Length: 254
Ligand code: 13P
Image 1: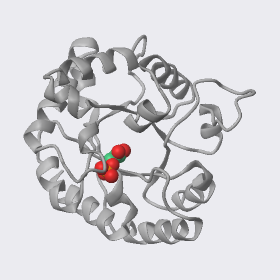
Image 2: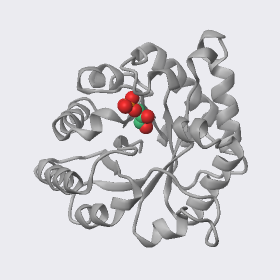
Image 3: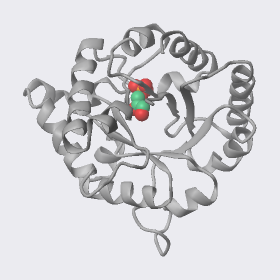
Image 4: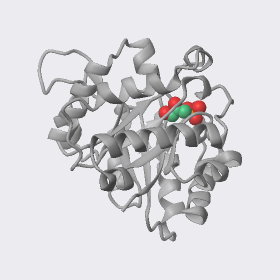
């Protein structure tokens, strides 16, 4: 069955004391809730992964990483591998985020290798795709998304769990959200691609998240779209009350 996912991508934010406060508060906020088909995920900076997994183990949320290297172990200074994440009981990992594609030159090939390493270690990849403003204005949004999907999923089987996040680059951190209709159109395209390349059942079961200036005020209209199964939330996931409100909205709608 398709899950609804409310995931917070903290990016490079928060100092240690705030991390503890946030996580304990989230744990408390979720304690009395019946989350049903909703999974809540926090993706903190990797430095905070240990405290995050310690709190999560007795709480109703999961921990994800923001990135992973495509090698297993070895002389790669500053990097973290999928088997290390697995050894810390990390359940999810964002890959191919547009900020990594743009600032760290990540290619579809690298993203594909990362999906493979994550699957080998039973970690669920959250694979990000999305077009830039220039690409949208050129009318090539669909081509860009399909190229990213073809690259990321090359030789990948999806019996294992995989999540896709559609994050239009022009909507990230800009306050400019895709309209529910614009987002739905691309989510439909993605689900259709999964249907054609895998199976109708896989397409039905796969969660596709929206990301890009998602906040309490626009969560309901986005989640009401038939192919939007949750959010990958940046700025609004840093604030415990906004993030909790968005979880509550998901609980009301899904
Ligand atoms: P914002 O919600 O801050 O726009 O960020 C979205 C995002 O990039 C999540 O991965």
